Image (cartoon, rainbow, N blue to C red; front, side, top):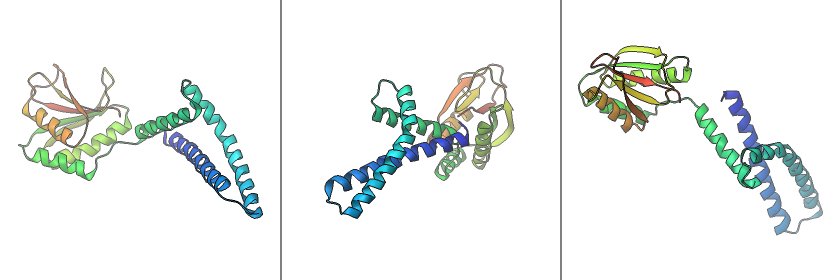
Length: 207
């Protein structure tokens, strides 16, 4: 999802929120107090605006019901909102919080100096950007990054992957695995028989 499409969806759901909030405000004022003539005119004007907003909302109600045909209209709209939140999260680039950085650095510093190769999926700018964030953090933990490159993989890769040549994995792979996990990052392990013996590779896949 592009930034422009994400902004467009944000505007859509802001519109939905305005309709719901405006409707609730109108209902409360209309049914719980005796309005003066001036207030009635204001309520009538407000109701006209709500009707206009609802008219703009109707296409999105149709989209919601098309995407979730088994749900009632309101539930379908709520589900569409949840779908949007997932898309928005996918569109946001990965980063490390200060807490995560400290967790990785402290975990790696507790062990000996190791060597590491960092690779990102070729053509994935977000993956490359996240790899450039991980590199200095790992180096501050006392490790040496001896290789930093983009690679073409035979299979799609999502998230982080530590690659070693064979079982059992070297101590460095286990140490890196624990450090990344302590920082709350999702990382998996993999074997690659053609890889150099004793060299650990950290691969950064698509989000």
